[in-house]
Length: 599
Image (cartoon, rainbow, N blue to C red; front, side, top):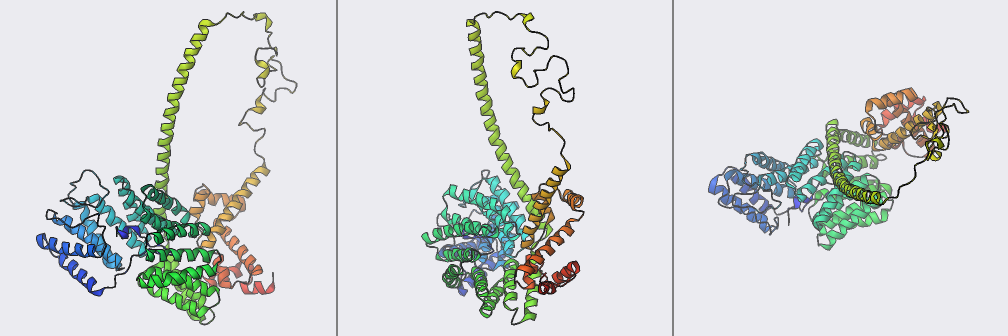
């Protein structure tokens, strides 16, 4: 099994997770070996490491084409770093994330101290007598740590290590490691509610996998693309990529991975309103995920099943599904998926246990608020800027090559024309010169003058219309007939506010209005946006958001039967009590009174 850990990322809807090894005896044996190895040196450490790698090979954990058995000439530090890294991989595979993090960090700290004996980077893990390339090992450690932080919902740290992996991958020109980090970055964008930014990362990763003809990695990347498009609300595209991943995994006999794809397909079908097909996919996926020990994906699927049951009005069974999911996510500190389960449980308990429902909603709000902070958004914006800069540099190189080609062709063409003119001049027939007296000053008969704009009145005398306009100026591109009128300026202002309100409503649905992001999308600074809004409407941007929220709330209260808490959510407010207070302050009535009065 070729480095399965690098192919996986904690996907918010259908996390790819390798099979949990249930053999307690085997796990105990590995634990003992690693503990003993930690305190050994020299020959003793080498023998213990070999026993550990024998277990990895016997469990099909390693690719047989990439031997990793430590050699006798391996330096002690290199042996430690290599073994600790693979211990991190093993514990991740067993879903023991704390221990995986412990050994991955220990290995990473040793990487800068390893002997940089290899001057040329290699993309293979096959090692020589002196050990693996330190840069490759550093990239692999960074990637694993990035994914571990992602699992813990520590997105700023995950972003830091994903960026480090991408930098090393590009430095090494290693396609495999570049795609790993792109996949991780896409997942971080998705979790930070910026799936549109993640799209470019995952599409590049898919392109690289297709270029390498690597179907195993392509299935994982397509799975991530399904998640990205689901987050963007493009459910047809999400279904397309999840089906593509499912077909690859089914064709290669990876039934446990195919079950994950079924879960992704179920999410897409559910969003498209087809609960029957969604339920059918989950009925097939859930037993396989549970049997394989993939608790993470099993819990995500139980979340989805709970949403279907809630939609069908079966609140009791839905609550059981959400509780199952929480029992997996909470101990692992998977805040993203736990928040979804808490929200579902709150809805399921609303009728039977309002107090517990309110408690779950409060916990959901806490988790949601903890997921996103300015540090992560700053890091993401920096990463996006770097990515776009790389794109611009590539585009510049392409244009430079094209420009050089055009210059060469132009030079050849110019040389050919010059030669042709010389030949024509030699053979030219003398033409009689025109008499100067035949051209009168100010005449409209100047040779070639008839077709020149503004040339007809070159007599030196004023035109019939006086001197208010120079000849031909009315047709000069870029010179308007008049300055912008107040009415056209008002039209532009109206379009500006209309675009701004659209972006605010769009952000409001996701639960967070980020004016830095909105200003960026409108190609202005945050300061300029504030001034522009104030000058046009007399309102601050905060006043504008509140007005839009109240307007949306009024519309929903008049034209839908949604409960008050759900109206609040659609207005971007998670706290129903705060929403009611805000609404009453603005309208003079509570939401319920407003609805009952039928205004």
